[in-house]
Length: 276
Image 1 (cartoon, helix red, strand yellow):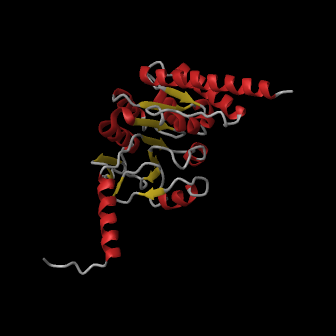
Image 2 (cartoon, helix red, strand yellow):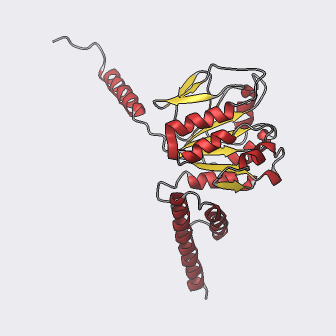
Image 3 (spheres, one colour):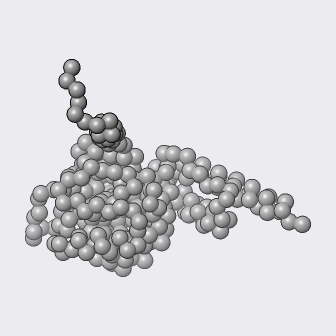
């Protein structure tokens, strides 16, 4: 029998690397957040992403209508206010949870076997449809696990994509046009479309943070500050009021609201018991 020339340490490293590769093949992206925006998108994205935790259980795909080459500036811009790892997708990348993927300017993407793949097609002079194509591809690949988000912007891109997400059983969020720097894209998305949530910009990040956990137990914890819990309860109430088009999500929100109210009641009782 031929003896390996590797040292014991090298054999262990090789074995660990092989196991890591196997584990990577089994990696499961539980939620896919796809965000489309245009004019006014820099500020809108800053507001949304700053409220997302570094351990958010989702892959976040961002497509912003921007000049060619500007995605490099965007990556540096986002890194100033989020600790979520940012991957600039040049051709294809394996999707990972707790990671943000930034698409090149003028490009859309598709999904296959856990990969995000940049489309080679760029059609100048035609109506921009990159957000629609991204959302449709996400809906086809991940169905009810997709959350589609439309923020500030011009033009009409995104509406057909949101419809595809809705019809696949996913959730749709549109920034309230009344507060958008450029309301045309959000307003168009809301027109004659059963959008799950129309939210003020300040609520969208917190809503995403909550909604990606709708398939898992949502821990509130008595140690969380009462002020934070009450703010979360208020957000849950606003989301529940708009979630009737998606019964499963509505049930999740109402359940979490009941648990949160129970926690607040328990904290109030603890505070009363501790008073002299």
